[in-house]
Length: 377
Ligand code: FAD
Ligand code: UDP
Image (tube, rainbow, N blue to C red; front, side, top):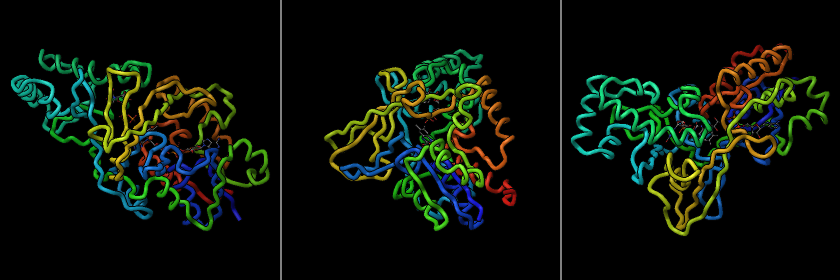
């Protein structure tokens, strides 16, 4: 019998485990150092029966048919559409910045003039990353570019990354482009929603297979010590951080972390939508209110204020890889080393050191499964 050890029970680990167990009829042991499944997507119902996203709001969205049809086998999704507000000079407006935001912030005359100039230069519906949008010749568009950069992106990015927008990988700020339309959705993907019984339940369904065994509270290092023979004869799918796997031989891969401060409020709603961003005020970046995601009914509500932090080893969680040339070089050194190890595969946000959304973590697991020649053990 061939064995497969999957390290980590987030989306990446759960999906690869399911495919191996189901399509190859092989045994899989999933270990996770946390005391729960579902990794960063973990959610639970609190005493008010509100579904809380422990590691920050998670909204599923994808354009990928393969990912969508895979996940739909395990759970239905509701039709929640994520909308986010941003507070600028005390006023709550729409983000991504679109024509509605323009009219919310400026007088009718100014907004109309700027809209016309935007549509002379770009097509209706264009999505323009903020850094690209800085390149303007027209005075009014220059004004708008500076305004959006300074009021929405500059201070939020400094809080989040301790870097200015032009000092981080441009794909990151491009996640929230200026949208030359009136579409108030934060994500424009074809499929979006929240699994109707939550993410933990969805992951539970994915790993619910007679060939899969899950061991929680189990760090790979300890598991390996106690099961050295098993490890030698198994394939390893590692969704933890690749530098940790190699004992930080070349140094530590940097990450950003977060701290969530949860507050219960004795009212039905705390704010007008699930997420409000505060680029310029406070030291947190945003406030999440969880009951919006599944439409939970309670006369109380739970919110979380999100405070960005440096990742500190063994003090907090790795949340965001810090993508830059130097860190990619370091990651590639580990990847190169990994090539010498037969039957060890790295995947996931930490294993690949990539800013994956959930759908891309799922896709990566599916594609890795499809790429592996499974007769190599
Ligand atoms: P993880 O979920 O991090 O799972 C990795 C697992 O491996 C963890 O459970 C960890 O405990 C375990 N592990 C690590 N090392 C070891 C070890 N040595 N031994 C044993 N176990 C180990 N995506 C979206 O699509 N929509 C969103 O709205 C969204 N919001 C996000 C908000 C925040 C604040 C963050 C940080 C991410 C968000 N994401 C979102 C991304 C999403 O969380 C990831 O795409 C997803 O969690 C990736 O799954 P994964 O399995 O690769 O990693
Ligand atoms: N961003 C910003 N202001 C905002 C929202 C986003 O400056 O109000 C920038 C910031 O650099 C952030 C990036 O855009 O890290 C991506 O935002 P997203 O909402 O996708 O972040 P995530 O939900 O992944 O933390």
